[in-house]
Image (cartoon, rainbow, N blue to C red):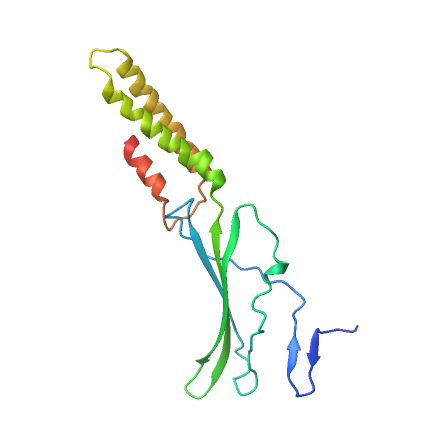
Amino acid sequence: MTVRFRATVAYNGSVFWAPGFKWRTGCTIDLFYFPLDTQLCSVQFVNWQHGRDMLVFSLSSYGLMTNLMEENAQWEVVNQSAGTQIIMATPTVSVPLVEFSLTFRRKPLYYVFYVLLPCFTVSAISILVFLLHAEAGEKISLSVTVLLSYTIVLINVADVTPQNGETAPLISKLYRRRTQ
């Protein structure tokens, strides 16, 4: 069996290696400003086998190759960065570290039309309750209708909100407070 590695050795002894596999990573997200949120995802690679005297990470002048990324309907990449540093593994051994960071912004058009717009519309209609006279029978009907509308909007917000145990979106907090 022949194993081939994608490594190129230059005339000065430097080796360029392009790994032939994919890493799957995950990042924690903060949903407080959902659906108008921006997320930062960082990935660090450390070589614990060899110290910096045997292995040096260097970055390409081209930056991250985002041209290989697939277009996503929900997110867009707004910033990218990469950096290297040396960390001390022990008092006498230092190892190289490389970190890649991507900043994503959610594309909010869907959420504006199907979450925010209904929220603001129901809130605006609830003000009409105070314009009706106390003797009018429509005041109670409108109040009940607005309360049911709040419930339906809250269910819609809960359905489209990503589930995260760390934080709750601000819009969910506002509507829970209004319906209680």
